Structure formats: structure tokens, C-alpha cells
Image (cartoon, rainbow, N blue to C red; front, side, top):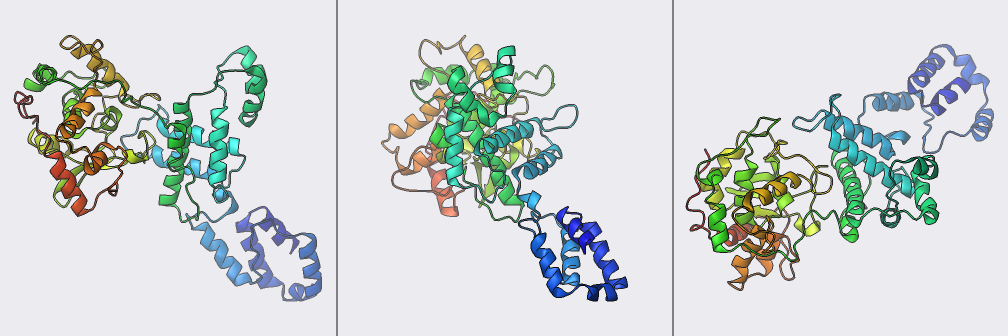
Length: 445
């Protein structure tokens, strides 16, 4: 009995099963040697570990052990630990195709997501995901706003790196280092929410996602700025879409990946005809382009660790404009795998997502034709130009607001759209007309 109890307390279920079988085979006498009262006394003196249920029926216990050995669910005490789930998440992402990995096959963005998630839990001081609630999430947000920006130096190694990170906020009260930015705070919360959403979708465990939507309280990961940006004039658009990229398909290849930079052709067109934010376009994957009820639409979300949205309203559905389909967009995405990015030539940046290098190219290339800096114009101006189409008609209200991801005061549309919603949204999208400025653009085949 003592050996059986020890194996149970050590989580050695295989040994526990063997002991039970031996007891059934050889110990009719030994099972009757110990009086029930003595067993109860021993149980009181040596209670089982917390949360471990002891079944007095050998057959039922053996059945539960065998069930656990073949189970993939979160059943044991270790499997409510966020660290266990992070290991599963890393393995899952390592096995994914089309994910950026290092030479050892480790998915880099998943690794960064996990680091952020584990720091949040260290600041909270709780690793059992079934115990985490909104109060814990708010505490993490408060701690992150006070978390110091610590560089690697001899003095910082002594003051900070020699201590656990949950002590850094207190240490910094004396050190006075600059704290991390609001956008960085938002990324920590958002990445933690990504892990929780993945757990909820893949494991039958009763837990909530208290971090969902919390990034907006921190200001979120700001990937673009809407203020003080001018719209493009008609003349600007004519200059842009008269370039050889659009009229002759003179698209360069990435210098190391040796793949065409199709982002240079598609991103300006998508921005003009959808009003999407720059990084929303840059991070698109094939699975974000959904066909439902004969309507092709962009399904914007931040479910993957390398995807970010400005706020919760940015999670929305945008029908693909017929002009994009006419120019070959549907043919362009058709051969891509579900998790494959539309623009794999773009590299990821922690600060600006996949848009950073494209934004630099756009400014460098088109400044020769338009005074972008002097006139307060940049790639974001496509979004403003799109919105202006509705403003000029006095219809920048409920439905257009849901298309561009602004606050909607009168009508709320589901993020993925019902049949009627998608049809309504498509009708609004089709009212946007830029035929004259796009007349020189050659369809991509």
C-alpha cells in the first residue's frame, strides 16, 4: 500500500498500475491484513497531493490511469500550467509549413510570443490558467506599464538581471530607468491573448481568455497613425498607377529570397479599394481571403502570433472589390496554401509588423513623383482617399464605419458577416470608383 501511495504521489502512474495488479494477484491475505480503520488512519497521516482524486476501486483506478496514458487532453495538474501549454504551442508552430524558423527548426515568432506570455504570468505570480481572471489581467497591465526598459550592461546585470523579472518593477523604483512604451505593453497583452485563444480552440479545458480586448486599454500595438495624414489627389493617383510596376509589371525580385515582390503591385491597389490599414494588408494570409455565398472577402483577425490589429473593432470582414478581381487577385491567391502569406517577401518587424520594409520602399520610390513629406502624404493616404469617397456622398455612417474598422454608433455587424451583411458591405464597396485613375493598370496573370 505504501509503495502504491508513493507512486501515486510521484505521478508514477505506470508503477501505480503495476502495484495494483500485483495486489490483486498475490495479496488476498495481505488485502485482509490491514483493517479498514488502519487504512483510514494512514490516509489521514499521508493525504494525497491536492487535486489528485484517489479512487478506492482498483478496476476503476486502473481504467483512469490507462485513459490518462492515451489522452491528449489537459487532465493532470501539470496540464493547467501555462508553461506546459506554451511547450505545446511551440511544437505546434514548429510543425507548421510556411512559418519563419531558425536553423534548428524553431518557429521564431512563436518563441517571441511565448516569452511575452510567460513574462506576463511571472508578473501575475500565477501559472494555473484555470485560476487566471480579469483581475489578474488588469494587474499584469498595471505591472507592464511600470516595467523598465533594461539593456544589457554590467550595471544592469547587477541591478536587474541577477533577480527574477517580477522584482524588476520594485527595483526600478530606485534605479529610475525608462519604462517600456504603451505599444510594447499592448504587444505583451496581445501575445498572451493569442496563447489563450489557441488553448481555448485546441484543448477541452474550462478557462476564459481574460486578456482578450485588453490590449485596447493599453493603447494596443500601434502599427500606424491616422492623424495628420492627407488624402491623395486624383493627380497623385494617376502618377502612382502610371508607373511601370502597374502598367508593364516591372516587379523586382527579393534579393535573397529570389521571389517577385508582388506586394508592390497589390498593396496600393488593395489599400485604395478597401480602405485597409497598411499592416492589415501586409500581414494577409491565404486563409484570410474567404469565399462565402459567392462573395470573396478579407477576414481580418489577429489569431496568429505574427498578426496584429489596432483595436477590437479592426476585426472585420471586407468584401474584395470587383476591380481587384478583374485585375487578377483571385488568380493570384488561388495556388497559395492556407497558412501561406500573400507577400512572403516582406520581413517581420516587432514595431511595425510586416509593413516596415514596404513603407520604406513606398516612400523612397514615390517621393520622386509626389512630394510625400511636404504634403503630409504616405501609404496611409490610400485609406483616407477611400474614406473620402463616402464622406463626399455624406454616407460615412454605420456600414462604411464597419468596413474601415471605426466605431459604429448605430449598426453592429458580426466580424465575419452573415450573408445579408456581406451583401450589404459588398454593395457599399462597389460604390467606390477609381476607374479613371486605374485605367492604365494591367491585370496580373
